[in-house]
Image 1 (tube, rainbow, N blue to C red):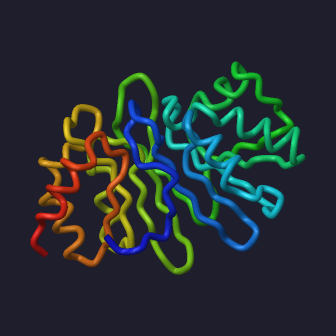
Image 2 (cartoon, rainbow, N blue to C red):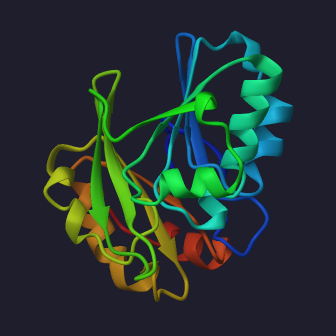
Length: 215
């Protein structure tokens, strides 16, 4: 697959070691997508947090592999670097989540949208609300599905998308089963959208299927 605009810190599904999370840097701004239980240590070890004027976290949903170290990251930035985090999320329980994890209110602000980010509500599990989003940056339109079991909410946005970051799995269920969506993904790529697979529960199986495609 070609180089992506987003850089991944991990592409694993929820029961593996490297939580699915990506980031990009723009001038002195860091944009982090999700902050699961393995992500805080990666950010702490691999980023010079002093150099950013703005640190943003786009949060797709509240499963632990997507939000499990969010509070830790916020408190670390607040108490050690004296920086406030902007959380960009439409999750209805985000304020409650931060409260019960002891996150100081002064350490963050929450935005439900920005000029270049539009959330797309999708279907994942019945217990919590889940979102993907459309991101416009550097004259590119990026679609990021988050965890989803359907591509339907994203179809209208994909017509002119430059990049699609899509949740696929071997087993399906509350995620997209690669065997069932491979032809649809092939057609999307034929129309000019670069595709990047993520949240992988069996990378070898998934990549074997993906690499057999004929375009």
